[in-house]
Length: 231
Image 1 (cartoon, rainbow, N blue to C red):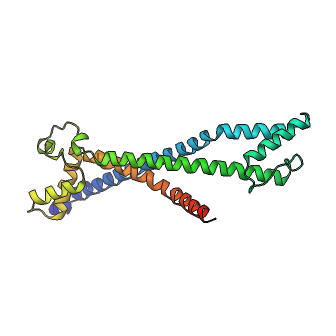
Image 2: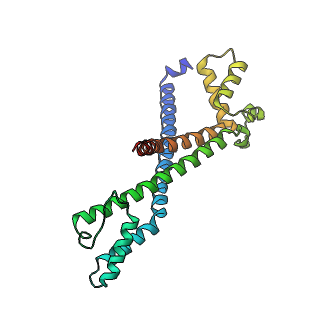
Image 3: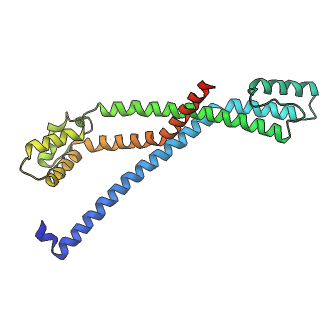
């Protein structure tokens, strides 16, 4: 109450509550950041795994072509195979330029493009998967997340059909018209916590954070596709 907050204990309790709320918020944000970082690392691993065999073949051919102890005929066959793999616009390899700056540049550019294409596919695949997960979570009601509660009215199953925070806000606004907005918000938060909706909101925030982290790459890849269509 206002009177209590004017006492030393009131200020202390208020400060503790504020610190606790800040810690909870920080903890949730830290979890989201950790999940997002884990997801980005997995995308990198997926991209590298998808081109592992192609890189291994490329490296084997380069070793054969660059080994002067191997018959020249076989080395030329390796060069020919490399040029069949590497697009003409990147450049053509020869026995003479393989170990020069020109040859190194061609190999680095091709490897970089190989990874870029693989990562673009991995990013899009993960984004699509997250989108599907988000739709699935959004379609669920609070009752599918609710855990058994043991404290009075907050254990009500009346909220089991609710799917969004707006559902709770409408319910509270109708049932508790005599309360001001701040008090109604507090009740909404309590109902959300007890109904299972809090878990749903947390999952949606997590999915949104991961999708947001991928969006810059999604847009960049789309721009490259559009530029490629115009060339």
